[in-house]
Length: 71
Image 1: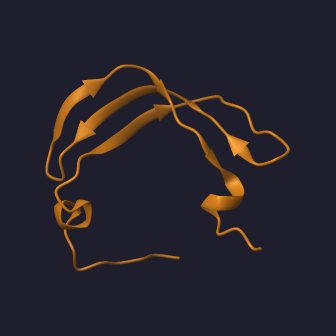
Image 2: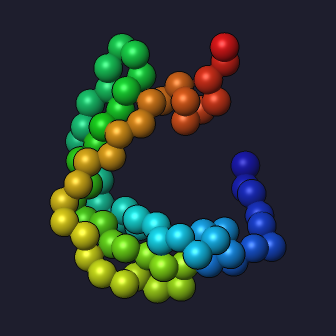
Image 3: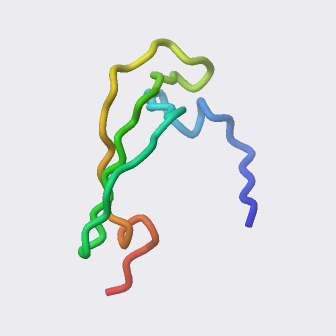
């Protein structure tokens, strides 16, 4: 599926900054769906350009929430 928007990346961010993940490798998933990959290379993104490199970090989310948990 492809999704298309008439909004620019900057408009979608609404003045907020974002983290652009370039390299993320490894991580683990629990039976409850918690997923936490370490990010080796990430940059701060202002909607138009990468403004700086970030230190290594770890993302965390839940696979069920990311895919639209069914109650």
